[in-house]
Length: 77
Image 1 (spheres, rainbow, N blue to C red):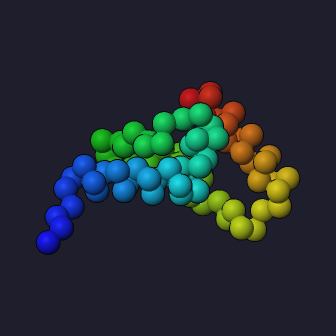
Image 2 (cartoon, rainbow, N blue to C red):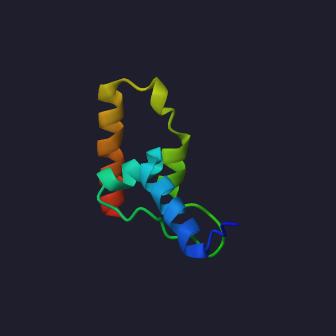
């Protein structure tokens, strides 16, 4: 019987995070893949904005423009 340990679970989670849309966006922005969690369970506004995006409905130009906007916000803090 194979038992998956916490290290294996963490590696799977990290792989999944890195390859998700959110993970790819963080990578494009040059940010850490795992965002810091709030003490109160609230997501950072930038992350909420990313989650609300309907990526499949954006044209390539709209997506690139949005990516630049998000990058600017991320750099401003």
